[in-house]
Amino acid sequence: MAIDAVNEMLDLARDVVNENVDLARDVVNEKLDLARDVVNEKLHLARDVVNEKLDLARDVVNEKLHLARDVVNENLDLARDVVNEKLHLARDVVNEKLDLARDVVNEKLDLARDVVDEKLHLARDVVNENLDLARDVANEKLDLARDVVNEIKLERVHIIGPLSQNPNYDRKILYKFSRFADRELVRKRNKSTYYIHEQFPPEIVAKRRRLVPRRSARLLGSPPTHCT
Image (cartoon, rainbow, N blue to C red; front, top):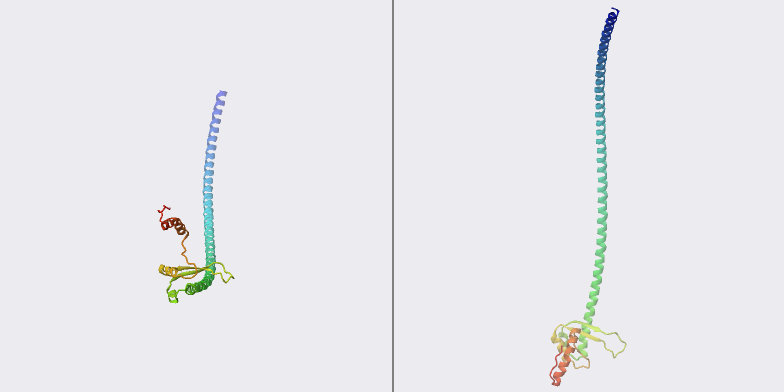
């Protein structure tokens, strides 16, 4: 009987303990739910604060970027203006130097033209002087009439050979006739002691030399030999 009473008390105590455990579990779960709600609320609030601060930081960054872009564009415009100004200045300096160089070149060209004209006039005077001298020689020393000499057409006349103090030394005169008939006239009508001969290029002289044996053989009546 005592054992039954003990068992009954134990069952009763077990029921009380189980009831208290269930109650404690409910209290703990309620507090956990409450704490979860508080944490979630604070997380939402913190997220909103973070997002707000991020938006504010983004706005500040964008504003600074726009400001920096404006400063960069302003500096670029200023640099472009400076570069353009220096380019215009350099172009003006280059054009000025080109004009100066053109004036110097034109001045030198004019000077060179004057020198060339002077030398041409001098050369023309020398040529005319040589032509007059050649006609005088043909008239006086070759005994050709003055009117015949004046009709002779000469392209140019060269007086060759070194100058000499010897009065008996005559320098050679090289005539270039414009007409074959004038050359033959002077050559055939020469009755003076002066030797007149034709001047040929070296290749013609060599060829004429090779033909001399044939001419000599023909004059002697011998059969001509073949010459190359």
